[in-house]
Image 1 (cartoon, one colour):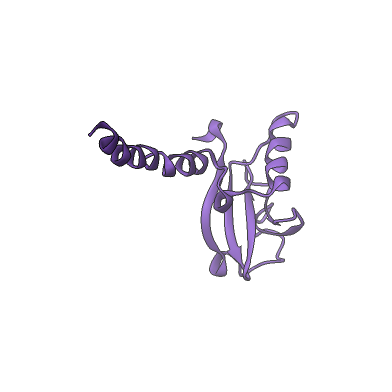
Image 2: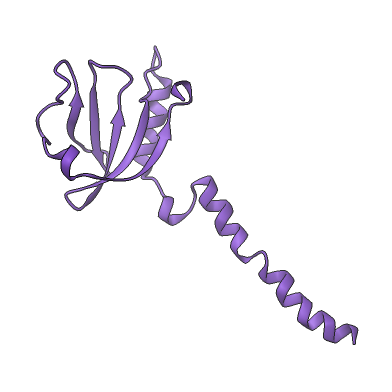
Length: 126
């Protein structure tokens, strides 16, 4: 009888841990669907090390013209809010700068880009 009970209990006990690893990875940002290009992470890390520190207020992932892009929102008014592709090539600045209207290279960004998620927020600005 003990063996019969163990035969039924073991699959349930081992199956209960199946999803927890994926959930932990997703929470830590290690899931493939949550993967961040290394160069984007490097841009964030480098900005945190600047003297004086000038990290962006936040970094958001968008889909723009069918491609995944990253908007780095600057801390203040006179800086451009830069958009990078997944290879960290600068695409444009849809806003910011002296006029607040960016560099004019992607005037349709606000109307056509779709926000996917916020990647990072500066803890100093929360």
